Image 1: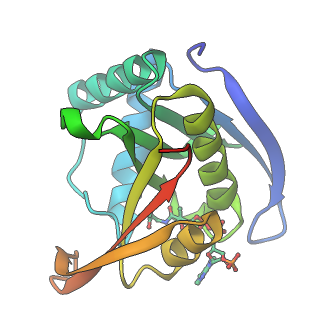
Image 2 (image 1 turned 180 degrees about the vertical axis):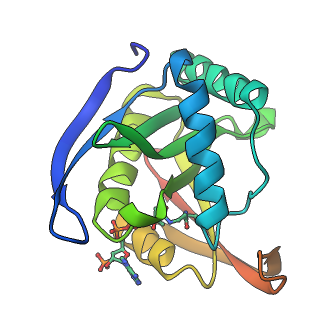
Length: 191
Ligand SMILES: CC(C)(COP(=O)(O)OP(=O)(O)OC[C@H]1O[C@@H](n2cnc3c(N)ncnc32)[C@H](O)[C@@H]1OP(=O)(O)O)[C@@H](O)C(=O)NCCC(=O)NCCS
Protein backbone atom coordinates (compact mmCIF):
# COMPACT_ATOMS: atom_id res chain seq x y z
CA UNK A 1 0.00 0.00 0.00
CA UNK A 2 1.36 3.38 -1.01
CA UNK A 3 -0.15 6.30 0.90
CA UNK A 4 -2.72 8.09 -1.26
CA UNK A 5 -2.58 5.47 -4.06
CA UNK A 6 -5.69 5.23 -6.26
CA UNK A 7 -7.39 1.83 -6.34
CA UNK A 8 -10.38 2.62 -8.59
CA UNK A 9 -11.77 5.59 -10.53
CA UNK A 10 -14.87 6.09 -12.65
CA UNK A 11 -17.49 8.66 -13.64
CA UNK A 12 -21.12 8.77 -12.49
CA UNK A 13 -24.00 11.09 -13.25
CA UNK A 14 -24.89 13.43 -10.38
CA UNK A 15 -28.42 14.32 -9.33
CA UNK A 16 -28.60 17.17 -11.85
CA UNK A 17 -27.15 15.08 -14.67
CA UNK A 18 -23.64 16.49 -14.21
CA UNK A 19 -20.60 14.23 -14.60
CA UNK A 20 -18.85 13.41 -11.33
CA UNK A 21 -15.36 11.94 -11.28
CA UNK A 22 -15.11 9.45 -8.43
CA UNK A 23 -11.82 8.14 -6.99
CA UNK A 24 -11.33 5.46 -4.34
CA UNK A 25 -7.87 5.76 -2.76
CA UNK A 26 -5.75 4.82 0.22
CA UNK A 27 -5.32 7.37 3.01
CA UNK A 28 -2.28 9.56 3.44
CA UNK A 29 -1.01 11.46 6.49
CA UNK A 30 -1.53 14.62 4.41
CA UNK A 31 -5.31 14.03 4.49
CA UNK A 32 -5.79 14.99 8.15
CA UNK A 33 -7.34 18.45 7.78
CA UNK A 34 -9.57 17.66 4.79
CA UNK A 35 -10.62 14.34 6.37
CA UNK A 36 -11.57 16.04 9.62
CA UNK A 37 -13.70 18.58 7.75
CA UNK A 38 -15.34 15.84 5.64
CA UNK A 39 -16.15 13.52 8.53
CA UNK A 40 -17.54 16.32 10.71
CA UNK A 41 -19.77 17.57 7.88
CA UNK A 42 -20.95 14.03 7.07
CA UNK A 43 -21.80 13.42 10.73
CA UNK A 44 -23.74 16.69 10.89
CA UNK A 45 -25.92 15.81 7.91
CA UNK A 46 -26.38 12.02 8.28
CA UNK A 47 -29.49 10.69 9.95
CA UNK A 48 -28.23 7.23 10.90
CA UNK A 49 -24.53 7.42 11.71
CA UNK A 50 -23.74 6.13 15.18
CA UNK A 51 -21.17 8.88 15.82
CA UNK A 52 -21.99 12.54 15.55
CA UNK A 53 -19.34 14.15 17.76
CA UNK A 54 -16.71 16.19 15.92
CA UNK A 55 -13.11 15.09 15.42
CA UNK A 56 -10.21 17.47 16.05
CA UNK A 57 -7.00 17.72 14.06
CA UNK A 58 -5.32 15.62 16.76
CA UNK A 59 -7.93 12.81 16.86
CA UNK A 60 -8.19 12.69 13.05
CA UNK A 61 -4.40 12.49 12.68
CA UNK A 62 -4.32 9.56 15.10
CA UNK A 63 -7.25 7.89 13.28
CA UNK A 64 -5.52 8.12 9.89
CA UNK A 65 -2.21 6.85 11.32
CA UNK A 66 -4.06 3.87 12.81
CA UNK A 67 -5.74 3.10 9.47
CA UNK A 68 -2.38 3.22 7.64
CA UNK A 69 -0.78 0.97 10.24
CA UNK A 70 -3.69 -1.51 10.10
CA UNK A 71 -3.50 -1.71 6.29
CA UNK A 72 0.26 -2.30 6.41
CA UNK A 73 -0.17 -5.09 8.97
CA UNK A 74 -3.00 -6.81 7.05
CA UNK A 75 -5.50 -6.11 9.82
CA UNK A 76 -7.64 -3.46 8.19
CA UNK A 77 -8.86 -1.76 5.03
CA UNK A 78 -9.53 1.93 4.65
CA UNK A 79 -10.40 3.89 1.51
CA UNK A 80 -11.31 7.50 0.97
CA UNK A 81 -13.77 8.55 -1.72
CA UNK A 82 -13.02 11.71 -3.66
CA UNK A 83 -15.58 13.34 -5.91
CA UNK A 84 -14.18 15.88 -8.36
CA UNK A 85 -11.00 16.06 -6.30
CA UNK A 86 -12.60 16.61 -2.90
CA UNK A 87 -13.05 14.10 -0.05
CA UNK A 88 -16.66 12.89 -0.02
CA UNK A 89 -16.70 9.75 2.13
CA UNK A 90 -14.85 6.68 3.30
CA UNK A 91 -15.20 3.00 4.05
CA UNK A 92 -13.37 0.88 6.55
CA UNK A 93 -12.93 -2.67 7.71
CA UNK A 94 -11.39 -2.47 11.16
CA UNK A 95 -10.04 -5.11 13.57
CA UNK A 96 -11.97 -6.02 16.70
CA UNK A 97 -10.43 -5.97 20.16
CA UNK A 98 -10.38 -9.55 21.43
CA UNK A 99 -7.64 -12.08 20.73
CA UNK A 100 -10.40 -14.59 19.98
CA UNK A 101 -11.85 -12.47 17.15
CA UNK A 102 -8.79 -11.60 15.09
CA UNK A 103 -10.45 -13.23 12.08
CA UNK A 104 -13.32 -10.72 12.13
CA UNK A 105 -13.33 -7.25 10.58
CA UNK A 106 -15.95 -4.60 11.27
CA UNK A 107 -17.38 -2.83 8.21
CA UNK A 108 -18.28 0.88 8.17
CA UNK A 109 -19.17 3.26 5.35
CA UNK A 110 -20.33 6.84 4.86
CA UNK A 111 -20.79 9.32 2.04
CA UNK A 112 -21.56 13.01 2.03
CA UNK A 113 -25.34 13.42 1.62
CA UNK A 114 -25.36 14.88 -1.91
CA UNK A 115 -23.46 11.85 -3.25
CA UNK A 116 -25.77 9.17 -1.84
CA UNK A 117 -28.16 7.19 -4.04
CA UNK A 118 -25.80 7.29 -7.07
CA UNK A 119 -24.38 3.77 -6.76
CA UNK A 120 -21.08 4.98 -5.24
CA UNK A 121 -21.67 3.23 -1.88
CA UNK A 122 -22.28 -0.13 -3.55
CA UNK A 123 -19.05 0.11 -5.60
CA UNK A 124 -17.05 1.29 -2.59
CA UNK A 125 -18.34 -1.49 -0.33
CA UNK A 126 -17.53 -4.11 -3.01
CA UNK A 127 -14.00 -2.73 -3.29
CA UNK A 128 -13.26 -2.79 0.46
CA UNK A 129 -14.64 -6.33 0.73
CA UNK A 130 -12.44 -7.40 -2.19
CA UNK A 131 -9.38 -5.82 -0.52
CA UNK A 132 -10.28 -7.43 2.82
CA UNK A 133 -10.25 -10.82 1.12
CA UNK A 134 -6.98 -10.20 -0.73
CA UNK A 135 -4.91 -8.27 1.78
CA UNK A 136 -6.05 -8.99 5.35
CA UNK A 137 -6.24 -11.83 7.87
CA UNK A 138 -10.04 -11.41 8.09
CA UNK A 139 -12.25 -14.38 7.28
CA UNK A 140 -15.52 -12.85 8.34
CA UNK A 141 -16.93 -9.33 8.17
CA UNK A 142 -19.37 -8.05 10.74
CA UNK A 143 -21.70 -5.12 10.19
CA UNK A 144 -24.77 -3.39 11.56
CA UNK A 145 -27.27 -0.71 10.66
CA UNK A 146 -30.14 1.14 12.30
CA UNK A 147 -33.35 -0.65 11.27
CA UNK A 148 -34.77 2.56 9.75
CA UNK A 149 -31.77 3.00 7.41
CA UNK A 150 -33.35 1.75 4.16
CA UNK A 151 -30.32 2.50 1.97
CA UNK A 152 -27.99 0.63 4.28
CA UNK A 153 -30.44 -2.29 4.45
CA UNK A 154 -30.49 -2.56 0.63
CA UNK A 155 -26.73 -2.14 0.44
CA UNK A 156 -26.09 -5.02 2.86
CA UNK A 157 -28.58 -7.27 1.07
CA UNK A 158 -26.89 -6.59 -2.28
CA UNK A 159 -23.47 -7.41 -0.81
CA UNK A 160 -24.64 -10.78 0.49
CA UNK A 161 -24.55 -10.01 4.22
CA UNK A 162 -26.64 -12.36 6.37
CA UNK A 163 -28.72 -11.09 9.23
CA UNK A 164 -28.04 -12.80 12.58
CA UNK A 165 -29.84 -10.60 15.00
CA UNK A 166 -31.82 -7.58 15.98
CA UNK A 167 -30.89 -5.70 19.13
CA UNK A 168 -33.99 -3.83 20.26
CA UNK A 169 -33.50 -0.12 20.92
CA UNK A 170 -29.71 -0.42 20.57
CA UNK A 171 -29.45 2.98 18.88
CA UNK A 172 -30.76 6.25 20.24
CA UNK A 173 -30.69 8.46 17.17
CA UNK A 174 -30.28 12.23 16.82
CA UNK A 175 -34.05 12.72 17.11
CA UNK A 176 -33.91 11.16 20.59
CA UNK A 177 -35.91 8.09 19.54
CA UNK A 178 -34.70 4.52 20.02
CA UNK A 179 -34.21 2.36 16.96
CA UNK A 180 -33.41 -1.36 16.71
CA UNK A 181 -30.00 -2.41 15.41
CA UNK A 182 -29.78 -5.06 12.70
CA UNK A 183 -26.64 -7.20 13.06
CA UNK A 184 -25.10 -8.95 10.04
CA UNK A 185 -22.09 -10.97 8.89
CA UNK A 186 -20.47 -12.14 5.70
CA UNK A 187 -17.92 -14.95 5.43
CA UNK A 188 -15.16 -14.01 2.95
CA UNK A 189 -12.73 -16.93 3.47
CA UNK A 190 -13.16 -20.52 4.54
CA UNK A 191 -13.34 -20.87 8.35
C1 LIG B 1 -25.51 3.80 3.21
C2 LIG B 1 -24.71 4.35 2.04
C3 LIG B 1 -23.24 4.01 2.22
C4 LIG B 1 -25.20 3.69 0.75
O1 LIG B 1 -24.45 4.17 -0.34
P1 LIG B 1 -25.19 4.86 -1.59
O2 LIG B 1 -24.17 5.21 -2.59
O3 LIG B 1 -26.07 5.94 -1.09
O4 LIG B 1 -26.08 3.65 -2.08
P2 LIG B 1 -26.29 3.14 -3.57
O5 LIG B 1 -26.62 4.29 -4.45
O6 LIG B 1 -25.10 2.31 -3.95
O7 LIG B 1 -27.57 2.25 -3.38
C5 LIG B 1 -27.66 1.17 -2.48
C6 LIG B 1 -29.09 0.70 -2.45
O8 LIG B 1 -29.91 1.68 -1.80
C7 LIG B 1 -30.99 2.03 -2.67
N1 LIG B 1 -31.29 3.45 -2.48
C8 LIG B 1 -30.62 4.50 -2.95
N2 LIG B 1 -31.22 5.64 -2.59
C9 LIG B 1 -32.31 5.28 -1.87
C10 LIG B 1 -33.35 6.00 -1.21
N3 LIG B 1 -33.40 7.33 -1.23
N4 LIG B 1 -34.29 5.29 -0.55
C11 LIG B 1 -34.26 3.96 -0.54
N5 LIG B 1 -33.31 3.23 -1.13
C12 LIG B 1 -32.35 3.88 -1.79
C13 LIG B 1 -30.48 1.75 -4.05
O9 LIG B 1 -31.55 1.57 -4.94
C14 LIG B 1 -29.68 0.50 -3.83
O10 LIG B 1 -30.50 -0.67 -3.72
P3 LIG B 1 -31.00 -1.51 -4.97
O11 LIG B 1 -29.81 -1.68 -5.86
O12 LIG B 1 -31.50 -2.75 -4.35
O13 LIG B 1 -32.03 -0.69 -5.63
C15 LIG B 1 -24.85 5.90 1.92
O14 LIG B 1 -26.18 6.22 1.60
C16 LIG B 1 -24.43 6.67 3.16
O15 LIG B 1 -23.26 6.86 3.39
N6 LIG B 1 -25.42 7.13 3.95
C17 LIG B 1 -25.15 7.95 5.12
C18 LIG B 1 -24.34 7.24 6.18
C19 LIG B 1 -24.86 5.85 6.49
O16 LIG B 1 -26.05 5.64 6.65
N7 LIG B 1 -23.92 4.89 6.57
C20 LIG B 1 -24.23 3.50 6.82
C21 LIG B 1 -24.26 3.24 8.26
S1 LIG B 1 -24.57 1.51 8.53
